[in-house]
Amino acid sequence: MSSKILILPGDGIGPEIVAEAKKVLETLRSDFGLQIETEEGAIGGAGYDAAGHPLPDATLALAGAADSVLLGAVGGPQYDGLPRELRPERGLLGIRSELDLFSNLRPAILYEQLADASTLRPEVVAGLDIMIVRELTGGIYFGQPRGIENLDSGERRGFNTLEYKESEIERIARSAFEIAMKRDKRLCSVDKANVLEVSELWREVVIRVGAEYPEVELSHMYVDNAAMQLVRAPKQFDVMVTKNMFGDILSDAAAMLTGSIGMLPSASLNAQNYGMYEPIHGSAPDIAGQGVANPLATILSVAMMLRYSLNEPQMAERIEQAVSDVLDKGLRTPDIYSEGMQKAGTADMGDAVVEALRAKS
Ligand code: NAD
Image (cartoon, rainbow, N blue to C red):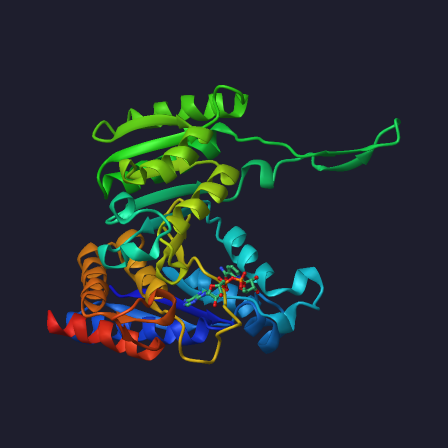
């Protein structure tokens, strides 16, 4: 049975990088027998331009009927003056919450060929391959009550609430264990159980869920130590799971270990492994329309989609191998360029990935 993929190019460099990912999908369909159907929709600024809203009803309906979603990026300075609820980013937050995408997968992968791009020494990061699983729809970013109030003393008090129900911890833990099962079977749960009651409960529930996954080696680490270990010896980690705010911070730090924002894909999944896949970078208005954006993060997002939502791990490996082959050949978009390499534009890079795929057909 063929899988339905909804493609949402979005704004800025979104349409350019998504065009290259489409070439890859088309090649997998025509040359390797991947059974997929694709549809396109508008989101973000493009949604506002087309239908007056960053998440048009028609797009949401298409997403509901699809098996997974591939997104480029949203946002642009021309939309900065819009009321908050009509800004492009609202389309992204809207689709995440409408589809209940609570599990955010943020890999930090550093291809050996790009080890020079990191600010850390090559031997510390070359070959790095970590997956951070961040809880995305709960925790302190959503907890009630929240606000800023005036105190009788005349000063103001700001407050937020950090809360997790057992069921919320259970589902993110299960998601992380499932991912660990598809990788090196090592999971590190990051918390602050020495200070926070929520973390105490988090740790207890993660251990309970872990009993269902005896093959996975579970460890626990306090968040401050995890931050330190990520920059000291990041290759010790396979999969990390953590709450929303810790994950927000740690995943950005881990991404920057690789030094190349144009290389990193991401996924957001619901309990049924329905997912939205997107590069971690934004719409890069500063380079939009110039044909220089790196499409590899988006192409690698397709690989993640094949592995985590469409159950096609061999197709995913084909893409990842093709990307590695292209890097071996020395092709580099400007963001990952270094002396002696061959400069490539967005379309050159997509074409080279297609060629590398076909070379192994
Ligand atoms: P950005 O990620 O768009 O750009 C940061 C820097 O990285 C820029 O110099 C850009 O040129 C470069 N860059 C990003 N992607 C690249 C690629 N594929 N190839 C080469 N270089 C690349 O972040 P920003 O500048 O802070 O935000 C720009 C817009 O994107 C804003 O409107 C913001 O709200 C939006 N945004 C969207 C998402 C998303 O759609 N998921 C995420 C972050 C930011």
